[in-house]
Amino acid sequence: MKGLKKALAAVLTVTAMMAALVVPVAADFDYEPVKGTSTKLTKYLIFDENIQLPDLTFTYKIEAGDKIDAGTDTFEVLEGVGAPTVADVAFTNSSTSYDTVQTADDGKVTLPAGMKYSKADITIDFTGCSFEEPGIYRYVLTEDQCTFSPAVICDTAPKYVDVYVTDDGSDLKIDAYIVHTDIAAPSKNTTGGTTGGALSDKIDSITNTYVTQDLYIGKTVDGNQASRDKYFKFTVELGNLPKGAVLLVDRSHATESLGATVNPATIYSNVTNPDSLTVGDDGKVTAEFYLQNGQYVIIQGLTKDATYKVEEAAEDYVSKASDNTSFTIGSVTFDDKTEDVIADEDVQTGFTNVRQGVVPTGIIMKVAPIAAVGIVVTAGIVILIVRSTKRKAEEEA
Image (cartoon, rainbow, N blue to C red; front, side):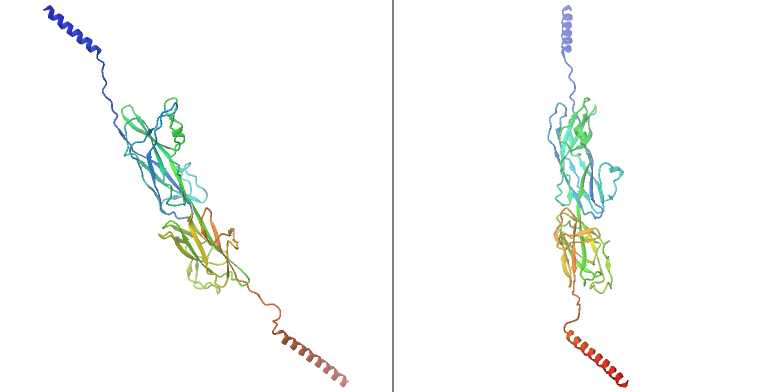
């Protein structure tokens, strides 16, 4: 009996010792992956206040950025995961525009004199991305190079979108989406937070400018036989423009319509100068204008590389193009070619029409001899009459 008790005691002792040697093993921990959401930037489009904005669509590409190892003062940057998308951003003539900077846009957009702007959201969708560990995940956002229109000045520099995934003590969460311009990794501060790189160059908008030029077409007449109230017909051909674009015409320096009776020197009547031109699907448009001395029209909203050709019906006047014979109407000097390509400046072109005649002076030579004989005969008759009268008076005396 004693032996059995000793055996049991020995077993219990060994079991206790073995239990004391067992190290507790913690249960395995796995994060529940967190799905991305979406973030937005504001797109600003600045354009001339006197134009009608054509349809413009901006597209974007977003792809994973490169991994950057942690440095002494910088965080590790992880390569982006998944496949985020960016929706196209479209502007049309019906887009709301502002000629003064709105309160919500103060400090974000600068509006030069004579310009206005429209705005829209750039939405970046990360719902197709699943993040499994805390970290900073990088993506690169690039804007379309604006090949759809040479008039658009694009912001072609890449933008870096960092997704901050954090451990909130129980699981993962998306803490922030930071869009910035510096490729450098975000720096650390003394408390282990972020500051510097990813924050100091943070942006929340992208700005584009739609650049256009104006085409001035003017008319002067010169010469002693020129009619300053006569109207001349101009034909304007424009090309290489955005299809469907509407070009507004400033007619404030010209007559809008010619009535049934204009003046004796004008052969045109019942015609109207157009107040807008609509570009066809071939990028071209042709229009006719009627101008008299000292008048001009302004076709607004022509894009860079557009072509123009201005012709006139000079009738029996001598036509001189403005690049050969410049002229000034008010404060506008017309000295450009009548056919060329729109570059980076407004174009002032047109024609001076000259009608000069020689007014006869003195006596016409074919009549002069006859006139001379008449004078001599008349003088002789007068002399004879005087002598006859004198002789008669002497005889009577």
